[in-house]
Length: 116
Image (cartoon, rainbow, N blue to C red; front, side):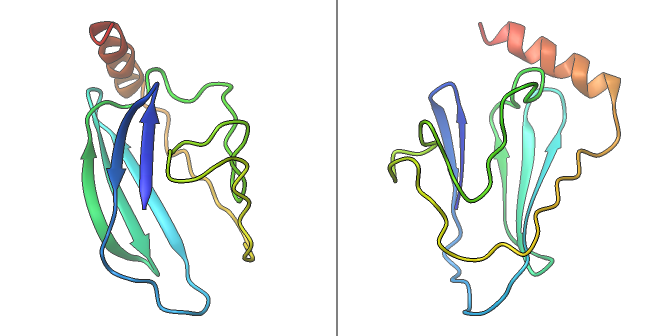
């Protein structure tokens, strides 16, 4: 399950496929196109579900904190209460921001202005 919360406008992406027990590699690829974003959630390198997000986060995440294994002070989703600590084991977390692309950054700024 992935819930995208853009200032209270939520998009939930959820697969019906279960995750087998044991160690797995989970991935989330977000591709921005200037107006919206494409999302792929993967399990062990295979796409479990793909979806379009209606609007990319305006101007990126900037100085907003990214959290893994804990969500505080407020939850992204109303499905749980903060701090919602992950009780499992995370062996590693990799964040790949990809190449800098000025046309995507310009498109995000334009999309943010249009949505106001």
